[in-house]
Amino acid sequence: MSDDPANSKPDAYAGPDPASLRPESLWLATTPTTDYEPFDDGLDVDVAVVGGGITGLTTALELKEAGKAVAVLESDRIVESTTGHTTAKLTSQHGLIYDTLLSQFDEDKARQYADANEAAIEEVARLIDEYDIDCDFRRTPAYTYAASPDDVEQIQDEVRAAQRLDLPASYFEETPLPFDTGPAVRFDDQAEFHPRKYLLAIAEAIHGDGSYVFEETQALDLEPGSPCRLETERGEVVADDVVVATHFPFHDRAGYFSRMHPHRAYLLAVRIEEEPPEGMYYNTASPAATMRTHPVDAAAAEHGDAAEGEELLIVGGQSHKPSVSGVPTSERYRRCEQFARENFTVESIEYRWSTMDYSPVDQVPFIGSIDPFSKHVYVGTGFKGWGMTGGTAAGVILSDLIVEGSSPWADVFDPQRLPPKSAAKTFLEENSKVGGSFVGDRIKSMLRSLGADADDMPEAGDASLIRRTGRPMGLYRDEDDTIHAVSAVCPHMGCLVRWNDAERTWDCPCHGSRFTHEGNVLSGPALEGLPYREL
Image (cartoon, rainbow, N blue to C red; front, side, top):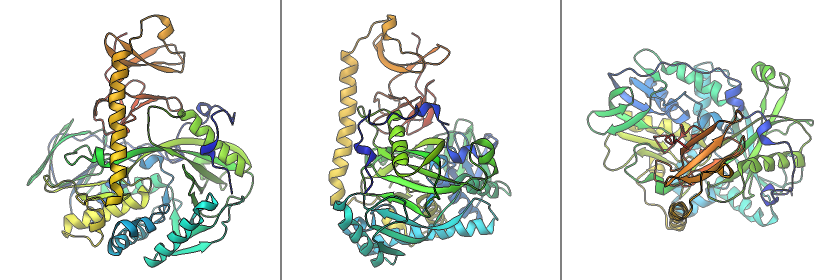
C-alpha cells in the first residue's frame, strides 16, 4: 500500500517552493478568456440563472431547449471559479457513498442519487454530440481503492451497495496503478473531459435568440414572487423563476451556512516518465488522494513543457476544512508533490491549483426549491467535490421542476429534507467549530494589541494579522515592498480571515469566503470585500 502523504511531517519533504510552480488551473490556462457584456438595466425573461459554472450553464441550456427565455448572470467571468478549478471527473462513483446512502435513506432515494449521476454522464455525452463540442471527452473506468487493510471491508460493502442499485460496479483485487494498492471498487463506462472547453461551447449555445449570458454582473438581492425581482449591481431583472446556482447561495433564508461546510483540495498536473495509468482514481485515505490523466493539446503544448499528444497526470488531494490552525497551504502542495514523486517518475510539474467545495452534513447536494418562503426560487449547491455530475444532474432536475413541475430524482435532493439522525452529530460538530472560531477570534482580537513599529510589518511576499487603532487588520507586503492593508473581519459573519501563503489570498476559516490581498471577493458566501485600511 502507498504511504498516506497526510501522515508526513511538515519537514519530511523539501521539494521546490510551490510558489515557483505555474499557479493556475490547467483548464483556465488552455482556453481563451471570455468577454460577454455586463447586464444593462431592464430585462424581463422566463428564468434568471445566477451563476456561470456547470450548474448554472447546464440549467440555462436545458431550459432554453425547453423553450424558455433565460438570462445567466455571472459576477465575474463564466467557468473561472469552482468549475474552472475542478479535477473534472464525470463519474457516479463519489468515494464510498452508496453504502452510506442505503444506511441513511431508503433504497428508492439511494437509487435516485445513483440514477441522477449516471444520467448526468449521458447528458454531457448527448450535449457534446448535439452541439459538436471538442472537449477531450473519453470514456474510462473509475476506481476507489483501499489505502489501508482496515478499509477493505468498506470496499466490499460499497461494491455490494452499488450493485444493489444497478450501478456498473465490480470488485478488483488490485488496480492498474504502477504501485501497490489495496482492493478497489471499479465503475465502468465513466468519463473525463476538459470542463472549460465543454462549458464555453454550452454558453455559446445559450447566448442568442432571446437568451443571454452576462458577465461582471453581481446579484445583490432577490425578491421572490410572481414575478421574481432580482436586484443586481447594474439594475433589475424580472423573471417568472430564478435559479441560484452560485457556489454558495447568496439568497440564504434557510441557513445553508449551517447545513454544509467548506473544504479545500489541491491539484498538480505533472509529466511522468512512465505510461500514465488508464482510469480515474480515488482512495480511502484521510485526506484522500485523487488521480486522472488528460491529453496535452496544442494550447497546452505551447503554454508549457509538455508535447502535443502527451498525457499529463493530474494528481492531488489533501482535502481539509479551513481552520485557524493546521499546516500552511504551501505545505499542502508539497505533500501532493511528495505523493506524486513517491509513486511515479515525475519529469516536471506543469500546473498547480486548488479548489473549494461545500459538503452537506448528510453528503447529498441541495437541489430544488431554495426554501419554504421563496416561491419560484430554486437552488443547486453542495456537490462535495463531485460537481461535474452533480451540477449536470442539478441542471436537468431544476429544468424539469420549472417546466414540468416534477422530477423523478428530486426527492433525495430536496433542500427542505430533514437530515437523517446519523448526520445530526456532524451538524453539531461543524457548527460548534464555526462558533468556536468566531468566539476565539473575538477574544484574541480583544486581547491582542500590536504596536506600530516596523517589527510588526511582514516581510516581502508575506502577510500578518495585527490589531491597529482597535481594529483587526490583514497586512500583505508585495514584491515591490508595498504594504496592502485590509480589514481582517470577513463581512459574511464576522470571523477573522487567515493568510493563504501559496495562493496569496485571505481565506475565511468559518464558511470558506476568499479574498485577494487587496480585499476583493474571490468566492462567497461573502458578497462584499474586505475594506481597505489606512496604516
